[in-house]
Length: 103
Image 1 (cartoon, one colour):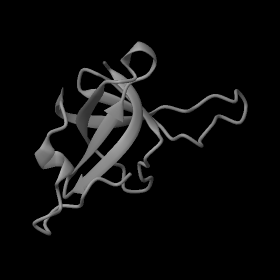
Image 2: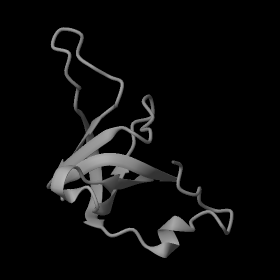
Image 3: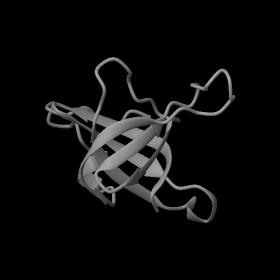
C-alpha cells in the first residue's frame, strides 16, 4: 500500500502521524506515515495522501484545480518509513502529552 484516505491524525511537536486506509483491493489495509505538516494548511481526516521515497503527496478532499476539476497534490516531507498502527498509537494522549487520534 502506498496511499489512501486519511482516517486518523495525531499531531505532535515537529511531526504529524497520519493513519491511512487503502483503496480498492487494499481497502481493508491501514498504514501510518509521519510527515512535517505545513503551518498554513491543516491536514484533515478525509483528505488523501500517497507516498514514495522521502516524499508524501497530500490532496485535500475539497480542494480542486478550478481549470481542470482535479485534486491538487501538495508535497510534504516524510519522516521515516510507513508502519502498522499499534495500540499505543491508538491510545496516544492518555498521558496528556500527545493528542489522541482525530477522526
